[in-house]
Image 1: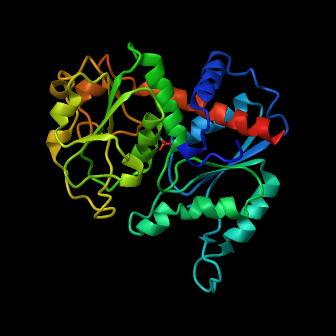
Image 2: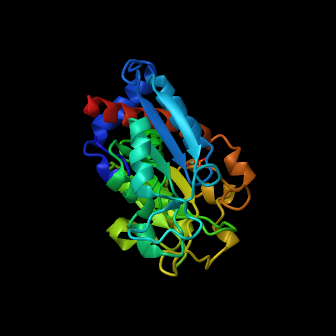
Image 3: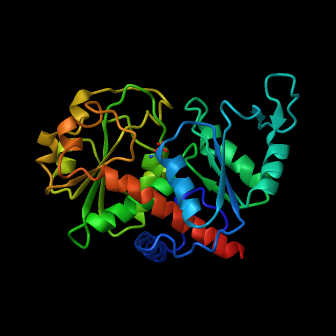
Length: 316
Ligand code: CP
């Protein structure tokens, strides 16, 4: 594996999951692999899980880890070719990416979408600029349109908690007061399409995601129907994709409640976190016995460690 910025970079999911499970059972088994190697974590946006789990994954591999919050600590970066830099952008991505590549063996980037410029967001403008100018592997810590490390942790969690060969997994939209990106649902959908699951997406009419990503996945506009016999409920808000980045529904009836969960096959509740209580999901569901959001977050470390392992192995 050279880079990891999309679920598409996984060529053999089964062997990746074997590696993740092996690493989870023995987190220090590749302790020598990262010796004298450095990962640079560049954050344009806030994070709790991704930042800490990636640092922990790197340390478990014996790597050094340096972190820069580019939104308030680094120079403001210019990404446009040929820009006349007479504004507030102090450094061009061409120099920045090459310089960071001299300090780091892997560069990891979090850069959320604008939610105003669909073309730029779908082109993964920031991450692709690093891919273009960096001379070392690049991984996504959540880009404009995908969060692939989250998706690896998600499928590991489903494998750990499933009680049947082919569980029914439902991705449900849920209301949120702010306009949120499409990255988590996009990567989750791609991962479910690679997995042996009965997969259903449910959301209000108008909240269709990119059809190039949903492809032929089942989409239901009736959440109660979608929840019938579900083994996993994965809740997530996203903003409108067609009326790009807008909030066109905050319908509270889409919140995941105990009444909704009662329609399922005693389903486990999943969310990538952070989650807004009593907006996305009721306290009773989130605090209930079937909520697996905490072990799901724990799996972020081992998912990321496996990706770093594969990149380091392929570098040697
Ligand atoms: N799920 C996730 O990416 O969490 P953070 O935004 O806290 O990193």
